[in-house]
Length: 247
Ligand SMILES: C[S@@+](CC[C@H](N)C(=O)[O-])C[C@H]1O[C@@H](n2cnc3c(N)ncnc32)[C@H](O)[C@@H]1O
Image (tube, rainbow, N blue to C red):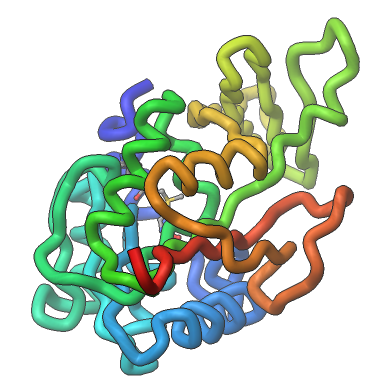
């Protein structure tokens, strides 16, 4: 399962769900408001910009946004909403690709650091964020907390979501810290359509260490974009890392 193949033309065409799911105003508005604040009047770079779910409203708010993205079909969808002059995008791997310029903010949302499947690539991703930032610049990550407490000993899979016509099931390899999400879509016939995506899950403390290796300090960790305190029960976090003002 190559990331490049996972984000092909068919997936890109059905990615946007305007007004609902991850495109719902109650999801996007606090995300964009917080990112605009963290950009602090400067330019932002989105790693894995996708179809511009976040970048398009952030740019409309007046923050100059550039992207790095592996999938050309995802960028084609972005181009139906914003041209290259409005939101420039460099095609490449967010762990290694350089975008021209220096930024106040690099951000990587919607669990996408877990699409890098090794610890080494994830650390490289932090180092690549640092390469794009000057002193005081920020790297913001939105990431789920690994749900291993739902996995009893001897069980390799959990159902994490169930609704009419959809079943979401995760299989775990706890040795390699990998999870494969299985998305089953079905109707009232006996057939189902299955989409799978592989991830390497990361503990919050491991994420902090990756940041430290790349020269960042943690500034904040909240449970969401509105600043809800992060606790042992939080299922997700927004972590803000910063390059010290004096290196
Ligand atoms: C869940 S989507 C997120 C897109 C967008 N950031 C958003 O919030 O809607 C994941 C995106 O990550 C991209 N991606 C996966 N691995 C990547 C990599 N190594 N470098 C750059 N983009 C990558 C995929 O092509 C896809 O567009």
